[in-house]
Image: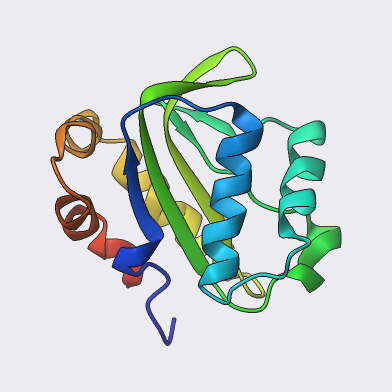
Length: 145
């Protein structure tokens, strides 16, 4: 990937809890601010969620659009938000919401990087206890290739 899919301004920590919809809305908004998606991407995420839950286990959800809504993606990027109060993701407890926009097939490479990080319980614990956005960003640097 030519440019970094994750920049520090795309990483956030919130002390409280939000609804699943609000979490998806924020993920889409961060991607839109990054210039990676159009305003239609939130709807694309909702469409995907109606078909299949993007809950991945290990307190992680990865909302993203459907193949049919690829036209809403302008560039590959990630958003990473930690909700310390948790998010009820259709009955599953989620702390981390990672929004993904992948141009072409790049989302597969990005997904595999995220999956690698979240398959390691120690890594998840470190992300959970990180005290700053900078600390989280440093832990996630592998997603930038």
